[in-house]
Amino acid sequence: MTTVFGVDIGGSGIKGAPVDLARGELAEERYKVLTPHPASPEAVASAVCEVVRHFGHQGPVGLTFPAVVVGGHTRTAANVDQGWVGLDAQELFRQALDLPTVVLNDADAAGLAEITYGAGRDQGGVVLVLTFGTGIGSGLFVDGVLVPNTELGHLELRGKDAERRASAAARERHDLSWAEWAVRVDEYLDLVERLFSPQLIVIGGGVSRKHEKFLPLLKQREAAVVPARLRNDAGIVGAAMAAAKAG
Ligand code: BGC
Image (cartoon, rainbow, N blue to C red):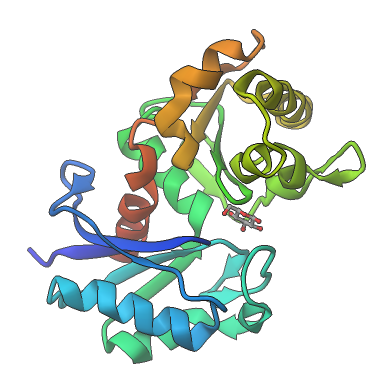
């Protein structure tokens, strides 16, 4: 069987690994390089090549990107270099790697992995996977089917982009305690709950490693709120899933 490779491109790191899709986990320990600054398309493409070549991988590669991605084109760039807006990112990576590629939104990828192998497994109805990192990413699922590019981190909260107030980066930027940050996360979850009435909200992103610090501080709500099970590997696994599906 051809191995499928997943790459998760984030604001601080670019990490990748071959993925075991039968088990929904990394087949080898992941390899990470720092995201170049500025994160121009060319610089990111060469960092991605370094990650994939580290494993000598041949075969399809799925890549996540923290932006709206439609048909392999990156359409927005909230926390990344503006050079990505309107770019055929899938083609950029295909040429750089000389391998078949698929590009999708980072939270959509993390959501696919959680819905298939993790905290959202076998869960019908409306499930929302939210990733808290530099921004807030969202993956919306209806009976296991993804509604891509929902971008719920950019909902308006107290007159601001919600992710400016409630992302994990906002906690660090404003030097908030876990309890202070939990109040902001609750406000944000109130908003998404009002709009989508999900049965389940899965909390992912880097901060999900520390879920015991803040999940118990959140208030009770209609939706069950649970930590992501694949933690920070969800993006890599979801990217590989997308590549396997396209291949
Ligand atoms: C971007 C989304 C991304 C999220 C998490 C937001 O700023 O607009 O596309 O999913 O950050 O990285």
